[in-house]
Image (cartoon, rainbow, N blue to C red; front, side, top):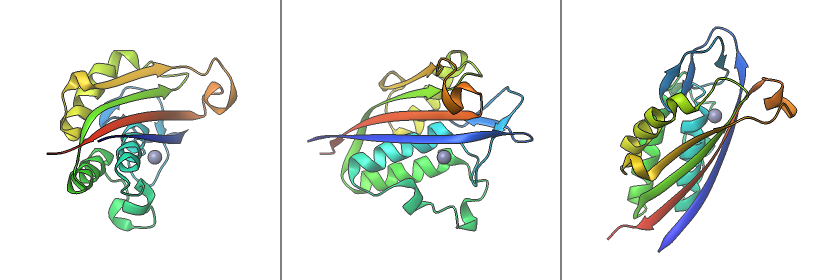
Amino acid sequence: VTRVGIGYDSHRFTEGRPLILGGHRIPFDKGLAGHSDADPIAHAVTDAILGASGAGDIGQLFPDTDERWKDADSMRLLALAVERVFAKGYRIVQVDCTVIAEQPKISPHALMIASALAERLGCAPSDVSVKGKTNEGMGFIGRGEGIAVIAVATLEARR
Ligand SMILES: [Zn+2]
């Protein structure tokens, strides 16, 4: 049995916070606003694997009204979601994600982020893909107001 899930996340740029993407601190003059560390890659991938396994969504598992998740390391939340997916009887076969931002450039960090995700997901780095795109100057991304991430995850039943 193969199952596919999609995840989407976006956060607004803000001053005075580090920019965390896939658990890595990316050198940039702004960070992202949010209750946790506001890591949109970790959040989109978490929603993709939860969606594929039918285990709900990130807001149900880690509500932003819960003080436990304030400034949380979102890669730890991803690891907790992976445990949930395993408990449902699935393993993660493959994850593909697209990071949409005018700045910073994602490609110099893509391999490092993919291998960090793979470690949390329990798959090989070659089974995780991280790609960067701009929005060609259009909309909130184009105006440099924030970052959005789309992720797709493929799971299969564990045996
Ligand atoms: Zn988020």
